[in-house]
Length: 280
Image 1 (spheres, helix red, strand yellow):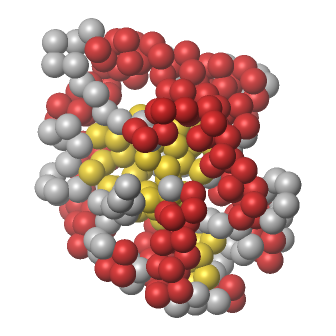
Image 2 (cartoon, helix red, strand yellow):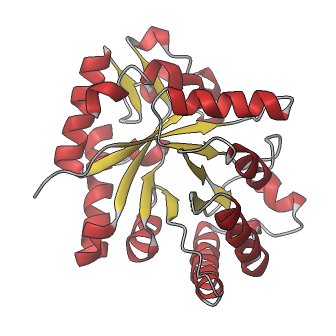
């Protein structure tokens, strides 16, 4: 059985100050060799859906969200927006969803933050209802759905419902070494998916790329997560080495874990672009 081809996404956090600058950045993402432009969804960032429609002017690149907070989405309105973006971008949309983890975003929407379990149940409800609403439309829009997270219940739910499962930055935390923790989560997905696993793409969200640890600024992540940069540097989502060494690491991840879709944060997309030709 042949290994799946690699696929690469670049997660952009801002759209710039004008349409022309945004389009130029989207074109750069494509020119660097990425397959998908992924728009974030937090307060302080541009609205992802308008950004993706504008990005659709650049042909030949996939367009995705990484990731919408399902906890503050209403399935009916989400289905309307997803269907229209699917049409306006000629079927290039990839819909990334998560359970939400920022209390302030729920508060701003007038909704309770709830528990991890209640947020996960809400995510599953949104995905289920969204698919029903899209299937009922005459042209049956069917964007692949990416679910991102790291918790055991999240991994099991995603294995039952997602087209793409993304292992977030925290997927390297857990029992054993960071890579053993990731391997454990991959195994949980495989067990929960059963025969579905052949139809699921596995994604790794990369938070840092550099020739050595000192080259990577992990201070923002360190502050947000309360974890020293030295600890973050050991995670599978932080790639350290020469382009060839990083390519070898990702080839091993594909061989051992089935991970073939790599998403890279905007600050590191140019550095990582040197790796892409080595994996095509």
